[in-house]
Length: 321
Image (cartoon, rainbow, N blue to C red):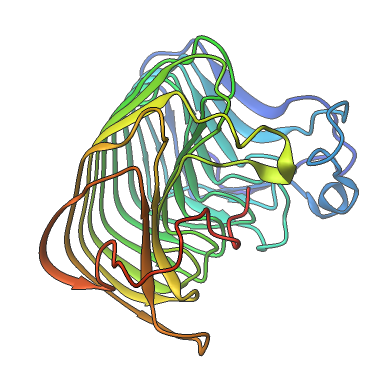
């Protein structure tokens, strides 16, 4: 499919999606065109964060059960909901993709993955009002390379552990990315009071530049937006085999790195190497918070990893959904 113009979604479009490709093998979508969701009116009236009975807002582009396919050189602009959702795909590449929306756009994840195997996100620019890239349950063997992110909420795994029968997240590689002006950078988030056990493993981040990112590195197993859960019950999601290597740049918060793991399922196999972050504000020295994790530490460490001088471990106040 060649898209060489700008397609405009109806401003009052309802339902779950606008353009949907499903059950296709060897699909190619390219051409340099723009999918304009015209979402401004929708963001202003969106109350889904506090109203569980809200009407679903349409995603701009959905790819469901696609195999051996490539999406290249297109732009998603001002989606009403998620810009691009990939569900149940196998051997699927998104490259040279642009996502454009203001940081104030609500629930507009740039690219969201769920129950996919073999996904490549390459050489793309994503700026939006939610996660630049988010991995839902069942995301396996995902490679993210040469992506710029911002504004938005960073590159996120999860949230996980909210529902029954979630599938493991395994095999994530994030490399050579630049994250600018986001509320989070590299984030793994799970809900407390999980209804069932879950797994997130083999996740590796390397050669990442942070530019004034509020929470550059975060494992948050007390993720609880709008207080919709019981933080007193620990998460049942097991996080293991995670590495952060050569992460450098600036943090918008003094609490630059947060590793808050589950008290009943502590994180295992966490490795940090050559972390070099400086704080751009004036609220005290930069610091690192740990709970229920004993990371392996090598190379440069700024701030000091799990410093005993750091304040009591807690989920960062600046965490956003």
